[in-house]
Length: 220
Image (cartoon, rainbow, N blue to C red; front, side):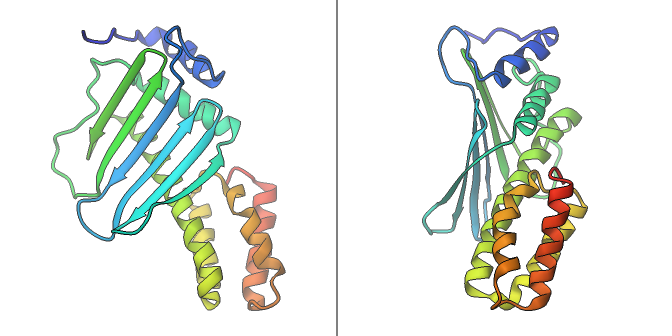
């Protein structure tokens, strides 16, 4: 049987229900799933799973290597904004088509799934023409890129300390372009860099400057 259509007028109440961490009568948990697969190249997949309370898991798998998983917490306002985007897109409305047949450069196949009580919808696509849905796509692309860069920065600090200034310049560029979802995710490693006397003074000074910027503007 085809799932019932969600009327647009229910969008905000649905967002509030999700935000409250509730579930509907079926007792199924509310969660959001995003995955990006690549047909070629070293990177095989990125995956993000978000629970109703903001608990988030990021998974990166490169080639034949073992998956790397990171658990963190989405901020309250970030989770609220994400759920509002799903409501604005009327995502659970099965009659809405988010998949575009337009031929575009292959940047990977994305899967987005929302589970809310008995209502579940999954969309698999390479391109979408829906402007509101593209905001959801951009959110997850940015969040995935943030977590991947954080892993790269940790590896650089461990194995290539001379490369830290370049990495910090990249981080500053991401922040300037507002593509970092949660800059405070970088605070712990920036503090370690700023206090590490074995690193170049330039790296320590840049880390301190970025920390001050994050403290003043924690959302970017």
